[in-house]
Image (cartoon, rainbow, N blue to C red; front, side, top):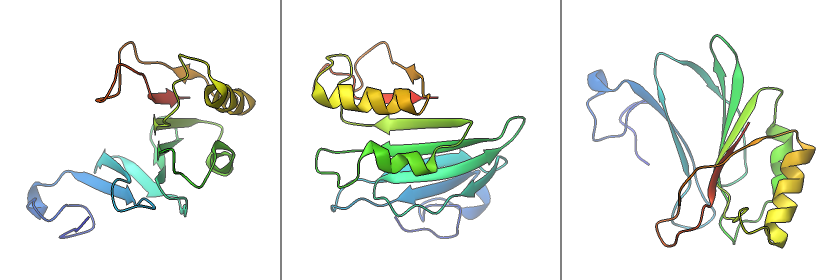
Length: 141
């Protein structure tokens, strides 16, 4: 993604931009993770070399860590690799490409990892996939 400044994509005028953009590229040519955070929120990026994982610390009434992920089937990292970035107050969200509603082997592995990390699921009440009626996007807190 091209920026005209550290805060704005090149198609926005700098003085009108009220958001900061945090992007982590993917291993292939498509995708990645993009976080768009209002600029008056105190935020600091956490260095992360995992493709498709973007990590930031947010300071406010309560400080917490926000981790955005996209985990396509071809991903070279596992949920265990995310453990390093977890903190006491943390939200992990995104497309984990696991249908935890059907409780297959991948879902069992992912849910066991989340349980071991004391992460609680926040499940959407409708499909999150454009290609099917599956729920593959989640948040864990």
